[in-house]
Length: 303
Image (cartoon, rainbow, N blue to C red; front, side, top):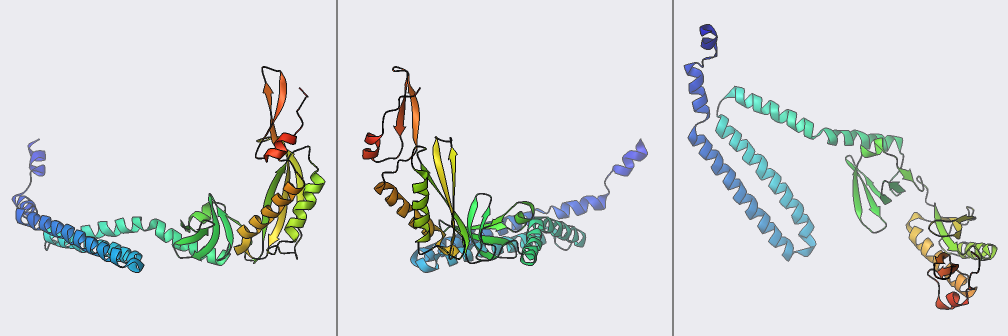
């Protein structure tokens, strides 16, 4: 037992080294460095913010500069604190350097993975810059394929950055796959009692006469019935737009033409049927129709 206690008993030189390492003066110097770095960071950030408010065109640039300054101040302060506390202790400096290297490597793991994924995307080319792609809930045009992220501009003009490595594990669809034209799908709903052949002709004519449609590829109309959310006839128009940039314009143009024609032909939209308890009969409840169409709808008598 005595020999074991003798082995674990600290030696005088180890105690002296520990006391020297925990020197109060060095700790106070480190605290002063941290406080000075905090003050400098706040001063620089506040100054750049004021400049940004005065120079509206340079505001975003100054925000970036402020972020770089913050990172630089943090790095310099960390280095000065480490040198102040460790002094000339080569073993401690080596250990700290190794720890930092491992930490940085672990932190950059996803970045390195994204860089490799970016290279694979450029080689394999599942999509290209200018393509309209759907990735999860994000749909828009690929603006840039960078080494770390893919930037997509949505139809609402929002720029979304997605790490490259996400595209290696999740599915992504490309609407035009490098081509200038792209298929656009538009759906129209009418009541099941309406003349679907007339509606089909209206939609077809509205589509082929649009200035945004690409007529070198076919225009097709698919007809089917649905019961969700209400009983209706669904006419799906599939046409190609001459340029992916006009996708929204084609949909708007065709929809406006179809609605005008439906109004002229008094084409009724889908309606729900509700059972009235007090009468024991079914009533037709029109949805999203003009008042003249609602008033002209014959009362339902089936039960």
